[in-house]
Image (cartoon, rainbow, N blue to C red):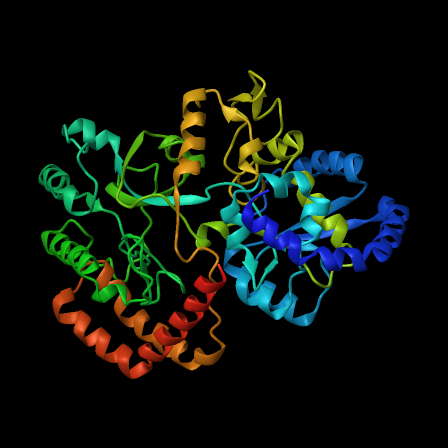
Length: 483
């Protein structure tokens, strides 16, 4: 067992011993009522068009395996945060769901402590998780989620529309940074002046080898060079400044849309309205395979950051059990089944067997005409990607490379660190309000960073940046001592 799991296991031994008799009686009671138990589960996103068919098939198997059924209710992305906040604040009874505002709600006690429940009722899944998942979802020594085992590491890619690479004979083999893409953008723009060269908008954040204790929108970061444990403002870092100068240069040359800082314009993967975009990829993407499938046309990418296991990735798709649930053990048992039963999970993620796909090997499938975007659930936020069947286009060599990359990816120095903002809430609010005024224009190259960053830093100083940084640093130093 991995070191981090040993720590969690040791911390729960006393609780397990004290609760043995009670758990035994609860389990007996649960068995008697299993036949009528339905777990209420919330999921984010849009409900598949064939939801009823998918869930009828799934619930038949769930009932057969663990004696319960699941009432899976979808909440759209636009309503998700508000509705889940209301559900949690009101104490409404539900059993499990996709995590909402994970760290804050775990700290408030909204989610059940799974430290002892996960190894007991979802053992196969728990034992198979990369240590980074456990570490990233442990808060103050307790585990609060069963994550979807998927892209435990990620890296930022510059992704190119291959039709344009071929049409204009543009070579991208030597691109390993933003700056390296200059020649490709120049050649494309000369040939296609009316097509967007770099498709970005107001939500874009320029990438660099940092990790962020409060997320990329905040001006707090730590460098991923292994040499420092100091929290810095990434906008004052020389490498970030060089990148922002590149963005400004591209903006002035017309490679970036003139309205990028205020635009929500989408550049569809499947379209020809863009030449280059930025994408996040992980091991389960099998290079550009998944991206190309989504686009319906060939796309090719070049990495501009190194692969890193981060807290953000570990918490990307978490399922939690509600602390108000009266069916905690069964909820965990269901998550264990969902993440370990290939028949159940593949029927949800790929769609209905025989209509959307057919097996062409033990773990290989061929997609059929019935495989449509709105006729299945998403792989990234449904269940364990390692037990998903792979398309027949995914070779054994690609799977081997996937596993090697997962094993070799570095862990962020702040993996598992969750900053508590209690002492600096006012300052954090003031800082994000300032960033909302500066971030888009800086990152899209709309303004000159050499003129704008000093103004930003001055405002951040007045808003209490030093106080927040010192609080993050103090908590991080304690985290390092404990780990």
